[in-house]
Length: 275
Image (cartoon, rainbow, N blue to C red; front, side, top):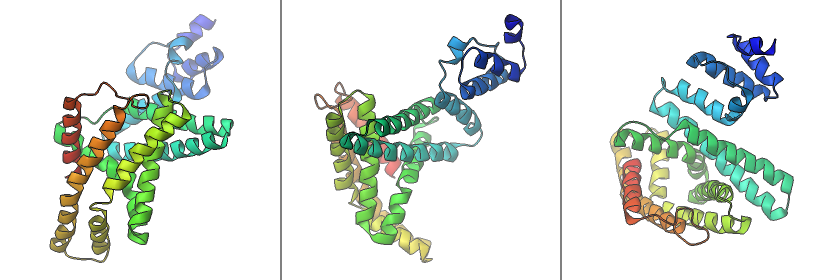
């Protein structure tokens, strides 16, 4: 009988019952696995469908990373951020060209990445630990740009960073129900702030990376990166302040109720992550 089968404790039976009720195969398999591990009774389809594939993936990843530490979490967040950025940039292009189907495809990728990151959760632990995780996340996202910079100078590095930020913010704007035009204006301002201020200290950072690759002594490398940090801290604070201001703008801002206290907190987090 169906009732008897739905109460079958076996993982396969749970998944089969959800699929029989119309659940997606991936949702059914992951939901059944989660129920077994948590010791939960079989859930009906209505409950199982509340957990989307990307949400369940994040739950599974978070459980795995619980034993791996900050670096693993930051790495996953960084790679997902890159995926989100390029999907958002592609979504902007397809919106501009009127390719509705492609736009929906890239919008879905961006939305799934955002859901994944939210379910993965914010950095845990002390302020310093959370700041370190945020810093590693940022480094992972910037790594391709730094490679381009080492090979071709500051221009390609800045182009990469600007494109990444534009894509991430365009995707965020669309999810907040801004029109394509409004989302593009907001994303353009956010990306412009990134490019204008990030160039300060970038040259020293790239020079330090090149020197490290050439085997320059650690004492000498400290000079390169010390100069870079001295320029990057005020530059990062300027970026944060400008982007904070964009978020408070009418029509396009996504955090128009933000206060000075919020800005101070963001600036403090920026300093910790930069250093």
